[in-house]
Length: 153
Image 1 (cartoon, one colour):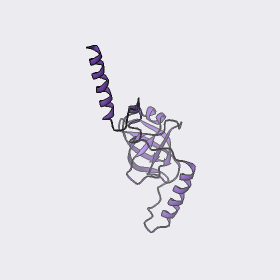
Image 2 (cartoon, one colour):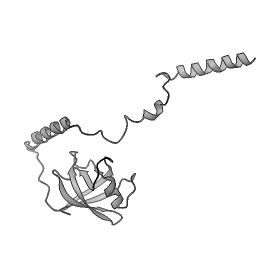
Image 3 (cartoon, helix red, strand yellow):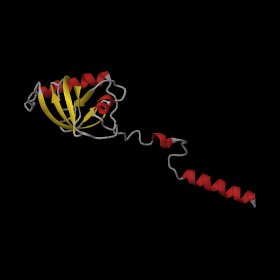
Image 4 (cartoon, helix red, strand yellow):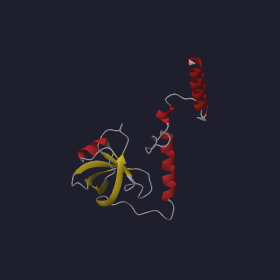
């Protein structure tokens, strides 16, 4: 009787694994959502050159937006956590076209001076903020805060 039960269990196990479609891959669930991650991949040096060439080509078009003011309120942005391996106080944002010093003000009333870096994204596409800046503003690392961006510190 125990041999019959073992045979049924073995058959059930094999049948259930055969229905997986991709076959049996132990621990495959750990990498399942990696492709759908919201964090963009790091930019490779060759991609940076291509992006700069595309920016130069876009600058020659008739629809070139006006230059960003050197100081003052640049607007608001919704920020997510940026690359945790990059130290410092910074914000990558489409609100600037070149790296400048600035200040961020959070809705909770806190503010911090940061380096504003161009993200290369479309206007309104959101920003990425450093861990240190999130902590200085008293924000949680999973928060999506609305920040006021001010150029010139």
